[in-house]
Structure formats: C-alpha cells, structure tokens
Image (cartoon, rainbow, N blue to C red; front, side, top):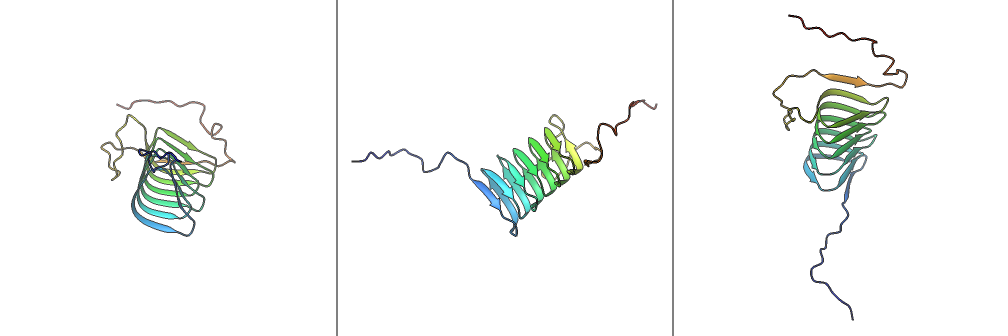
Length: 158
C-alpha cells in the first residue's frame, strides 16, 4: 500500500538552463526564469531574473535585463544588470547600467555605463543627462597602472 500526497507541486525546486547552441539563431522577445547560455545568436529582448552567459561563439544584439551577465563573445545593445564580467576576447558595445563591471585583459567595452544612484537606463536607452562615451580595451602587454599619469590637476575655468 502506498501513500499519495494530494498537495505536491509538479514543479521541481531547480531552475532550468536555456541554451542557444552554436549555429542556431533566434529573434524576438523572451522572458527566462532560469539561467541562459548563448553560443548561437539572439537578436531582440531578453528579460531574466537569473544569470546570462555569452560563449565565445555567442552573440546577443538587443536589450537584456538580467541578474549577472558574463560575456566571452559579443554583446551589442542596452544592458541592465547587477554585475557584468567581460572575459578575454569578450566584446560589449552599448549602454549598460550595472553596479559591478569587471574586464579581463583582452576584453573590450565601448559604450556608456551608468552606476546605481544615477538615472536608470530605459529599454530605449534614453536618459535625461548627457554623458561621455567610455572606451576601454585592455591588453596583457600594457600594464594599466603604469600607464596612468603621476599627477592629475583639476581646475575650473571661469
């Protein structure tokens, strides 16, 4: 004789991983409840409450909202996340809003970054204040600290 529970959920407590394999291409809008890994190409809008990673062959072009994003391939567009990590060979071009940004040597970021407390990016990438474009490309041959000047003097012209 077995015991059957009536109030047991059919859902598992583990979140799923969505994978877009190399050679596959998707276009459109999607909402992801678990992690996502892209080795193919995605054009459009992704809304995720979890992490997104872009593999070396992966490309995302469009608008992404996620918890953490790790880029080894290419991201172009608008990104809203808690943390962004650009690995060696990873390229990010666009507008990002993140609290934490880390770039490995040979990683590349070209675009605009906003910090928490500043005006938040919208899906349209529109913000009220003007800011300068930031371009950072790190190379292992160049020591970033050694390339900084010894002294910086700020003055107000008036």
